[in-house]
Each structure stands twice: as structure tokens, then as C-alpha cells.
Image (cartoon, rainbow, N blue to C red; front, side, top):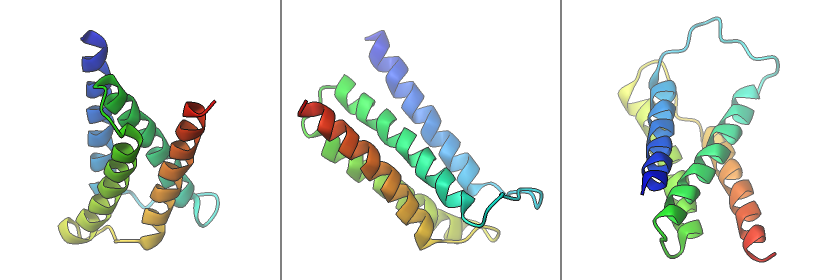
Length: 118
């Protein structure tokens, strides 16, 4: 029971962190070493998020937990991108961000799926 609570809270806190960072105004001093570094960051953030959601789904013994995980992670990423364009004047909707989120999600999903078949 305690394990479920910790896993669930970790996932929820991580989701809140994504929301906060995604909707916050970044300072002009946020410069990346190469042009698409933000896409790499999106990839990593959503890889971790996918793993957290999967662990939460497994903790609750949900059937089709991998499918649920992929759908929730991708949907969350799309909603965040939409919120950036609707709720802020300083952030933009970017399809490449969604693509990076999806790639991070699919990478972890493929890894998790391959572990099931080992």
C-alpha cells in the first residue's frame, strides 16, 4: 500500500513539475549549446514520465498497462503543447516538441515491451 502511494505521488509530482516548467516563462539566459537541445530535453523528460506512468499502472495491476501508459503520456504532451499556445503569450506550440515527446515515450515503451518477452 505504501509502495503504491509513493509511486503514485512520484508520478503526480513529476507531472506537476512538467506543467510548471512547460508553462513558465524562461529567462533569456536559457541558451543551449546546439540548436535543437530542447528536443533532446523533451525526449528525456517524456522517457522518464513514460516510465513513471508505467510503474504506476503496474502498481495498480492495470490490464493493458503499456497501452494505457503510451496513450496517457502522449496525450499529456499534446495537451501541454496546446496549453502553451492558449494560456501563455511567451511559449509556442511546436510539432517538433510533440515528436520528441512521442519518440521518448516510444523508446521506453519498446524497451518495456521487450522486457516482457524476455
